[in-house]
Length: 464
Ligand SMILES: *Cc1c(COP(=O)(O)O)cnc(C)c1O
Image 1 (cartoon, protein in one colour):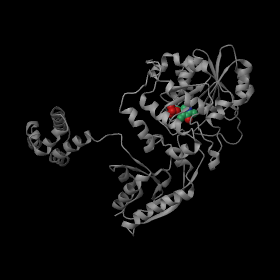
Image 2 (cartoon, helix red, strand yellow):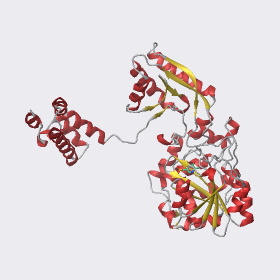
Image 3 (cartoon, rainbow, N blue to C red):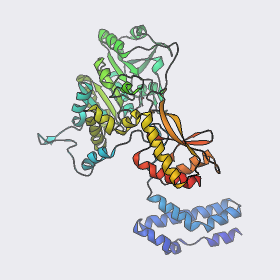
Image 4 (spheres, rainbow, N blue to C red):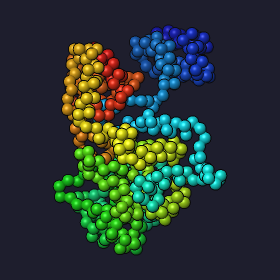
């Protein structure tokens, strides 16, 4: 029986002559197509030798053509794809954090499709520095003396510690030795930076004296870390960076703060818990402040380092900086984002991350009604409801903060929520939703203008 199966496997040469494969030769080199066919046929031969499940093997042999076509199709479908975010988490690290607006995209398009003055000083006609491109605008907006942009905030912290505290001690509160998403653990990042970690205080309470007592001859830096994704509540105390700055001045120590998200706008005006803005942190007198480009700032992945000119100049000369440097894509988009902040009302309107965070409940309710009506128009019997829900800012910003929001909830009848969730994820443009008991929640906070049609169509197809 197995012999018959082997015999049914076609020859590569005969496969490539088939019309359905020939059409691919306009798009993919023959060598590659032949390689994929050969590999697939080899795999089937080895499956036949390994297993005795004749039924499965027969169907594998029958489906050879279709399976190869699937593989060829996959080749020019990109793995990094648009998805629709119905989770309500605005800065969703798994879904790419911040989204660019069409306007920002158009602003950077010209730069990306042409040569640029990335490292060319146009006024002198000689070599310039890529770091000058965004430094002035960042300093103007944050009040910092100097600024440097690197690959991400993790890189910013490593570079700062490596430059200022390598081989020396860095003092941190035990309450701030956080882990952010597995790949950023403060103690390990400090080790990477070459600093010797000195822990002070306890998990829930750290006092100024704890820092004071730990300062010794070999202290390089006092480090404060935003606890981002968790909060110690109850009997707790941490030291404000303003007090650390005062201590640092007295003892001649560098004081640095990793802000994590770092917000440029005081969001408490919009009912969100107060967090000091980047500008306010700089004003406290911190020597170095770092934050992410793609969290609350709403820009590309980047790490922004602000600080005293003398210290930033040292970092610019560190060999690590070359390895952590950003490309023109990052600089172009970051510059565009920062320029929006020249007028706060413009930033709030034009930066999608901010716009989605400050949306009011009423605005989101209107969005829910729009989607609800689009679904009902085509399928009046669809079992869906408009419901209140809570969304989150995400990206480790304000972990406890729940934002009032509205959702369209799907109550499946012939299928179940887990199944719908899976079907959603397998779509050409996947939809990522939340499941709650047996309903699927589409939180409208993070739904973009051109998502509606697609969601409505897919919901109707799936609920049918
Ligand atoms: C998110 C975060 C980081 C890591 O920032 P990336 O830009 O993702 O590298 C570091 N520290 C804190 C406190 C954070 O919240």
